[in-house]
Image 1 (cartoon, rainbow, N blue to C red):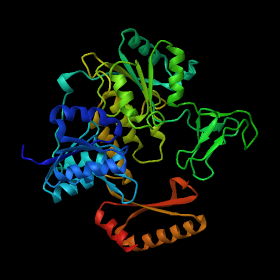
Image 2 (image 1 turned 135 degrees about the vertical axis):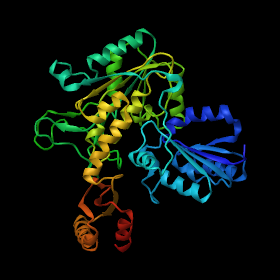
Image 3 (image 1 turned 120 degrees about the vertical axis):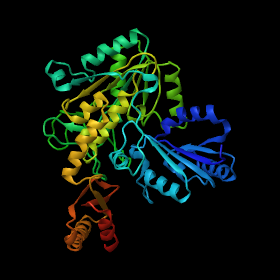
Length: 467
């Protein structure tokens, strides 16, 4: 009404379809869309339209934050907790922090929304730095889904080697009988995870990047970092054993198991491989929304913010794959993913159910996700962060250094660590490393990291400026 403009940030291109539909219904042609699938020319045209004042609402991922609006009034960040709001490319930035900075410069408001806020944002809300608004109930007071946790260790003991537990299988049968819909979520992509030898434990890795190769159809092993490709070996290159095979837990494999178990069920798959083409996101989601399929199988992209009223069952096939990541946020990520996944069920008038399959049924992130209790998770996780001096309990500076020569890199990082320790002694800064980055080599470039932790951010800024 005031004639100002708004930017609406969403974490995934996959969410564009539903979000834009809602905004178009409300504001018509005042709305425009930006996403990474647009060509540079199309992006340029959108920015020109925004600059000329032809659009008032720009919807898109983090890059939409730089829309050249001259009279910005509001920035909305949907699913604020999503890691996709962090840009890993230079210049690196976090859309949340950048949005707050831009809003201050242009006297605009920032509204963030999330069912599972990041610990940083929620702690700001608790301290009064942000205004915290709580929604105590679901839309139209709809009940939360009934969640059951299945211990996969027990399933194996009872002789069930399938990726589907008996409980999930039974629930799927009931959903198909009632002609309702189900979503099965897996925390990874590809046909299978890594290929390893069961005799000696050797894992097939990329010679250029320090990551395991993923097995794809046609007996091909592919590196998802640099694209290196090789044939799957018949015998282990390390010990010669024939017992070498894939760690079978991929979306394609689940799709095949579903076709075998429920031959009449119509199954759709949504992952990195099926959404490479322009418009493929919209195609898959609109056909699922139109009930052209009974089961949607997918990776993280299917559990974020979608609204399908006929979905009454969600299955988290391997809930704790993200719990084993080498990252201090892994419990937070697991809790967020599972809570978001469970929340896709029972959004219409029919009550929903969810099944979480896990090897760690007692872990607090899985228990609190099952009860959708964010506050309980926050208390537990914050006690761990306080103990270990991790954000938001303390500030952390990470220094990533890369180079082609491994020896020189090690030497340089050792010098850097010693220098940091010398200048930070009086501040009592907690220094970790140097160590190899979670992926220690990409495209023949070695990568090492150094972490510094301290309660006062200015101390870390000071050290950064001196090194």
